[in-house]
Length: 116
Length: 151
Image (tube, rainbow over all chains, first blue to last red; front, side, top):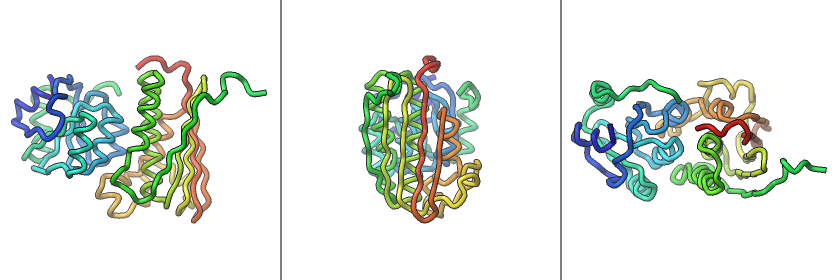
């Protein structure tokens, strides 16, 4: 499943990285603590968070994540948008809260397990 | 006489401004770009840039200012981070996963989980951390280049 598939399946709003949605999603991680994401997310994961500041882009680059989904209708800060666009990191927005969105992602076969 | 394998082939120093969260991660991003350009393996790049990111964040969160230096030798990568700031009263306690002195502002940004130093330890082959309380902190870590070709 690609990021683009997830966007279409869940009707996510694309805020950045429109041309970077073809990446294969290897799994998912959900957390709002950046060091936790750095420690436990895996390359190609889709990351679900409520953090909206530019450091989320730095984490996504660092861990080579497939994209970031902001939940609860949160919007990325303007400097986050700029940085994500520059770096080609997809930022997507969902009106659902984290628990609900992660549950639905899991139902489509996106797992939080797998090798680091 | 220095061994050829330890010769410094590349050295660059970056300044880190304490309390500036806007550009947080920019120095570790630059480190990552340098390592990518130099053609290191994905695993070496990932480990080094994760450790550099955590070190950079520690300076931003807790110090007034600091410098991060990257050294490349044929056998290993070395990063030295020196800062001026509050320092760490007890390094052994600070190394415990989950221990944090972060304030509310830092936590709201998603930092201060108490995992930074342990993330550095996990991703490096050697790590030295010393600190003078109320003066500053000195961190060094080394990542070996051999035996890490996979990933």
